[in-house]
Image 1: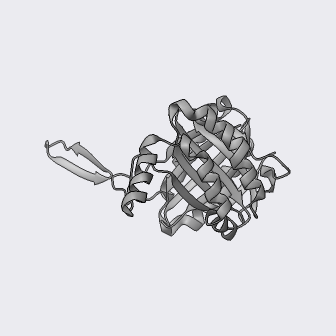
Image 2: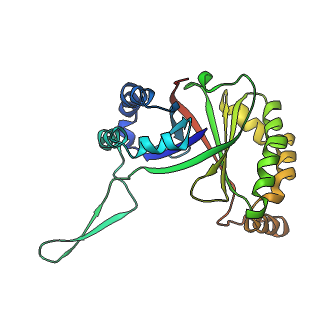
Length: 253
């Protein structure tokens, strides 16, 4: 299976309209695209303008065929009126009078693509997911010589931990197709309380202790400094945990 993340910044005034557009236009068209298994619109926290279109595909080839085809380009054009124009990026150009002109440019969607390596087994299929669910995405860097070990540990340690956790409906380990040591763990929960309880649990900390030796050495170095000096240390390889409400979603299975 293949996972595709389309990151969006929406104008807060049009989020309700965009949800309707996603349900009435985007989702039905994705359902007709060969290989698309599931599509959902999820909302990040705490920023009110950050959204993600999360899709699952049978194969990478089918996902990239869609991305390079006319349907995706057409839907992006139709979506642009909903995008935020409060971008931190500036476009610089010369006028006909050779004067420098600055203008903000609407935030263009960014795409991240991952191959699914390990999936939580059981009866929790994508078909059961809906807008009542809660999504947890953990991004982390793994040492290059420990990537195979981490994948094995995810199946033998992390998945069983999720299976014991109350409210966890599904979990996936995904590897970036563009950066070898970039992994994300996606878990779907019945509500945010279940996910938060798991993060604060003894079982979660025990699971981290069993797999953290595979994490990037830069991140482990930061953790050791935090323990030694008792202050927060930020590194480029930090493990990041994102929480998302599922605004709307539909399975095509």
